[in-house]
Length: 66
Image 1 (cartoon, rainbow, N blue to C red):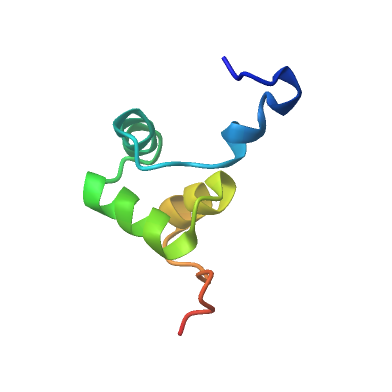
Image 2 (image 1 turned 45 degrees about the horizontal axis):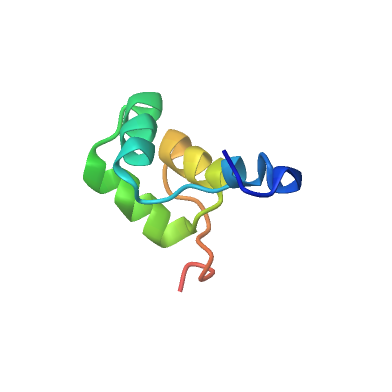
């Protein structure tokens, strides 16, 4: 539970490299651990963008594809 209740729910917008987060993304997208970690590194911590990337394949990365 968050220390500041006004900040509740904001963490759900982001993913981390904690094992429970990786395991959830692996189950939800049927991808390997390496694919999930690569997506987080390439896309960034935005949960929605990571899920789209893993579901549909490579999208534009935060570096603009460079």
